[in-house]
Length: 352
Picture 1 (cartoon, one colour):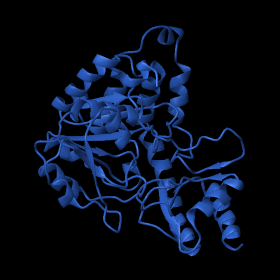
Picture 2 (cartoon, helix red, strand yellow; picture 1 turned 90 degrees about the vertical axis):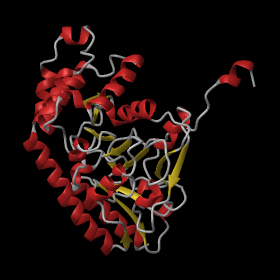
Picture 3 (spheres, one colour; picture 1 turned 45 degrees about the horizontal axis):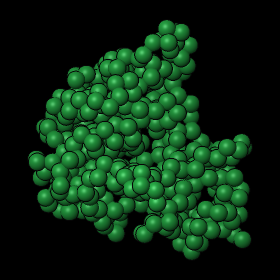
């Protein structure tokens, strides 16, 4: 090892879902929305001028922040925006998790959490989900340096009640509690109203899933003015111009088109509920999902075999070779025609 390598910060990076380059595939592995963004987004792109691209973007992303504020009936000072919810969550880790006491999150959860903890040298401890992949609230009523978990959880799709979240927030007045609501629009009740009651509660959402804008990278957090100010202090100490002009304009247009948002979300929910019946008929079991995916395992066929066979047939789903979940496949809800193709191939494979 060279001398300069001794001071390298070494981490095991997050592994994103595969992004295949070939065409004519059915991509159900990264929870993207199968429908296009609001038509208003295309209109917003059309009005981009050379000056908007030549000049630095608004560091406060005012047009986007104001649109989110109007939609969620909040003051702009209670909203933080970033380049996808990953950027928002990363900033939150840097801002709030600086204690020598471990932060807490579930053992089966979004696999970026432990990566950020390692990168920022944050001590952490995972709390096991119960046998039904549910959070055990008592595990989070102990000394900690902060708490984070998704609701609905990823990759399980399990939704916790508002009462569970409030119980955890109320039991931890000395810690920041972050609820990652990337999938909340697909059937859950947001805990957003609780931020008026708990100054230590931060709610994070994204445009990547329900608003079909994963490629634009827009995320946001909502919380007390104090929490948001602290996050902005960190952001402006690292990079003032995180959000480009196109993302700000398109994000504002998307969040204001409530009718299109409701239409596409309802289509995905209807397809998901049908998928539950179809997959059960094929011998799959899964926790009840309130997200845009189903976390399923087959009663007799190994997940690795199904994963491999589907890929050979140009259908991509997600699998992790990790304790407790290696026999599960996470299947994104696609269009009705994509799902029909999936069922047909699964039936053929399972009958071999």
